Image 1 (spheres, rainbow, N blue to C red):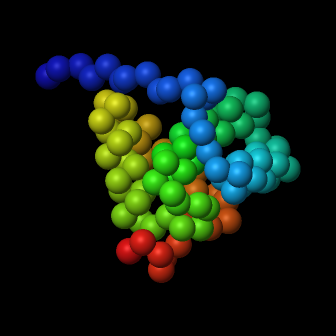
Image 2: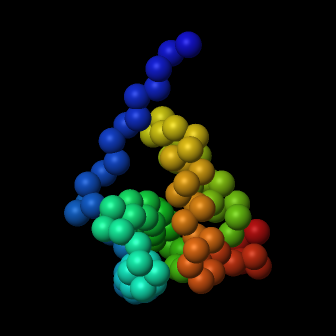
Length: 108
């Protein structure tokens, strides 16, 4: 069995997100802080969602416009980076904590 070495994520400074995603990410961080999340949790969750937001921005999708199939496509992108399955599954799971970023009607 060959060992998979994950490819590095781009630096946060290189990730561009739309103003709508910036507002959503800030609101998410405030909500986590209100719930008593640790600094490590804020960093990890924030980074995961920043990457998703940058990917969605690149596609022209704003918060509330992502569909399940979009998340599947994003998971494929993460898989191409050779991340562990637990890391890939963890990213979209963050969305269940926040108000809907995914739409059941759009982009299906």
